[in-house]
Length: 385
Image (cartoon, rainbow, N blue to C red; front, side, top):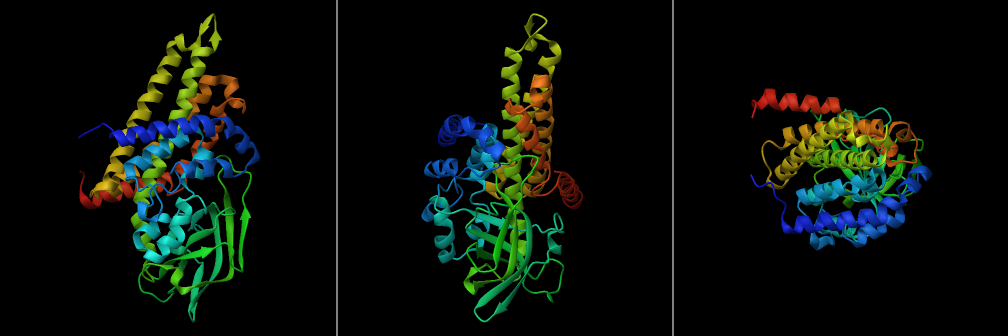
């Protein structure tokens, strides 16, 4: 197995790191405190090809492979998770269109996002539905040449700033089988009956926009249906392996960002006449933190490699990477605050923000408990590989 990055991947990593140092880190605390979407930073990121970096080149994107996209995510989140998510999720939902959209849909919806002219999102969760996606109640009925959508969606990334959303809804309530009868439909935010209510007071990732979406008989043309009617659930499941690998990369980035700041602080902070980095207790913490990060990174990279090569172990690896990467993020951020002592408990230091931001990685795109269920299912169903 080759553990080295290609020349292109190394260049991309270095360019994103410079961008993060110059454009994200100086304003991260400002956007976090204001709970404000970083439009200017996202626009600059778009100019670098970091928005919709997975979108094919023929539709205006960079067309990077998944491992390169994972490298980008780690670098962004190591600078600031909130702004990092705002950039990396500006094309949230694009996978559905890349995989199942028509050429007209791709040109219409993907190109504006890749070129920084639009923001999109994916609307799945509902007020009463989280992990159990098959229990959603938002519906779409066919009337003539239009779909009419009704219902609510909750915890939607880019909810109040997005231009359009790939919405999971029930289109065939009488379909046989628990996972049939659902479809994905693109809904523009300027449609009559569409409303977004921003959610504030989040524990972390405050720069990233989150909202509840309300569909009150929203009408969209029939050509906004993505792929085959009634196959939306199966379409969605196909891309969870990719999005969970991306969350693993988020966890690696958060952990690295917190650990690097703790390492720097430990060499500057003095107690009992010497830097606290000279104390073995602190050295052991740092050693464990960076070891765990490297382990999480390698698992995440292997999962990303499996995405690119359609490896049969992908589902298991993606859930392993997501579960472990998010756990490392929470544990390392916790130790980073501990190393900072009282200083880590206030927002004068970045580790306080990383500590708050880390927790979401254990919740969205499938909770830690769901990942363990999937891993066990794969082991028991296919044997230990």
